[in-house]
Amino acid sequence: MTQQHTRQQHDEIAHYLRTAIREGYFQPGDELPSEAELTRKFTSSRGPVRQAMSTLRTEGLISSGRGRRTVVLDNVPTQSFDDIISFSQWCHNADIVPGQRTQWVTRRPAEKSLAASLRIPDGDPVVSVFRLRLMDDVPTMVERLNYPLEVGRHVLAFDTDSGSIYQELIDQGVDISRTSRTIDAIGANEDDAALLEVPVGTPLLRVRRRAFTSAGELIESSDDRYLPWKASFTMNSTRGNPSSMALTSTHLGDI
Amino acid sequence: MTQQHTRQQHDEIAHYLRTAIREGYFQPGDELPSEAELTRKFTSSRGPVRQAMSTLRTEGLISSGRGRRTVVLDNVPTQSFDDIISFSQWCHNADIVPGQRTQWVTRRPAEKSLAASLRIPDGDPVVSVFRLRLMDDVPTMVERLNYPLEVGRHVLAFDTDSGSIYQELIDQGVDISRTSRTIDAIGANEDDAALLEVPVGTPLLRVRRRAFTSAGELIESSDDRYLPWKASFTMNSTRGNPSSMALTSTHLGDI
DNA sequence: GATGACTACATGTATGTACAAGTTTGATGA
DNA sequence: TCATCAAACTTGTACATACATGTAGTCATC
Image (cartoon, rainbow over all chains, first blue to last red; front, side, top):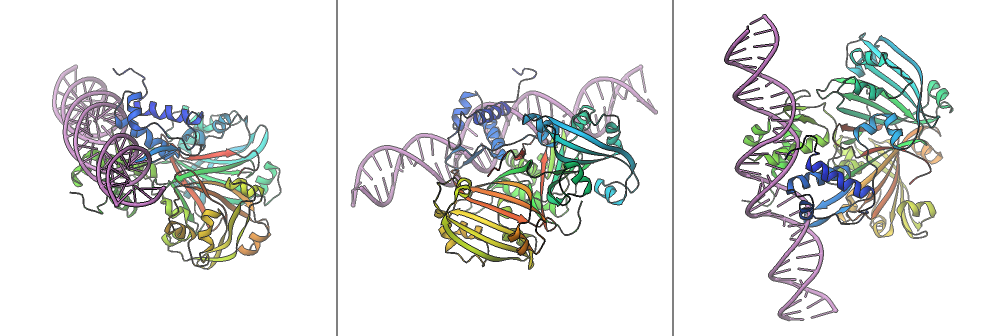
């Protein structure tokens, strides 16, 4: 009975619940159908239903507990891995026209700190990109990307004014499976200030990202600086569920 | 055979793996024992083992896939719900001595914007706290907390210079089950600057938090501003797993 | 009317089984 | 030697069952 591209059951159930919640069919505070009802509705066993519930729980959409009915929490914005790694993708979802003005693309030997942040030997070639990103033609963010040559060669062969580097890398078969972000604040330096059209020292939201393959190899090290009144991060955590998020004290100049 | 306080099996397995990873027994890149081995080691069935694995996966500690052995990812800091909601708790875990200098505690009718952020009618009584927080006696963060009276009365009866308000609320039986954080950057205003001993306009990392009960009632609305060289946020996301994190464009003055 | 025991019913945990769908390994054969 | 294929792993998905444990409602009793 396995059709070729049938969605997995737990996936289908999760998708149903997610869209039902997002479209307001189940409102915050409402009780979700019980597991028993869902097993009947989807002609499934408890396993897939519970797996779907677990997914939604880690997304922060629902809350459940022994004896209690599962309830819908506040409708929180959640984005998929792809949405959150690509500025272009993100804008597209938010009905914003993304733009970019590439300042430069270079290939050069890594100086010490950059080599360390990419975990490669000093002097190894690195491809770097420096772009201004725009939302609906308004300057929003400055983006500094660094790739080891193995990955960067795809970037060199790409017109960085034409759109999403991330999408290009995926298309080229680069395996991006995990990212780690460090968020803090920093004042705009002269480059930032000029591009974003704000005074030097203006507080910016800095997101330093490192991307890894599923084997754990470092693929990308980036530094994005947003105008804080144009974009902000939101995250949800639920008691009992581990948060995958940490507040860390910065002893030295990490990264 | 149920002893009273025996840890759940999946919890015990997860705890074992977590500490083994954290202590370097399994290093990044290493393969974890297979599910079969773990079931033998813990005299358990596959269910609890897989549940533990799932937990670690959403924590960002491991990566797995069909046919592939499960591997340890980069050792990422992960904090529990409790660690991340309480400054005191967080410092304690990092071997830092937390401190606080309460500036004022008030009870007053909520003005419009505060009422909106707490989702209560204008003029309803609100308890507010304004504290400077210190790490090892060094100013680190200014904290503005707001509670509806129902919760805030516990705060009024508490010596806010003595430690963790969060812990006190828990002890008083307040049910805190979910939080939503919005992170951005902002320049220090005069109050911030004076307390943190920096010039006005210094970029600060602002974390606005809202806490909810499991029923979805809003309990707390806070605004923490960190010196960015003292603390930063880190978060991990893995492809396939939903991220519970979102980058949002700020159209208006939300929250 | 309030209290408390009891009874459904909810979700959480655990076991066992079976198969699906990838990856790795090694034997086989040209 | 090298390519190919099959077997033996791996983790993912699904089903059936049982019991633990907490919640909420019913209903008799005080």
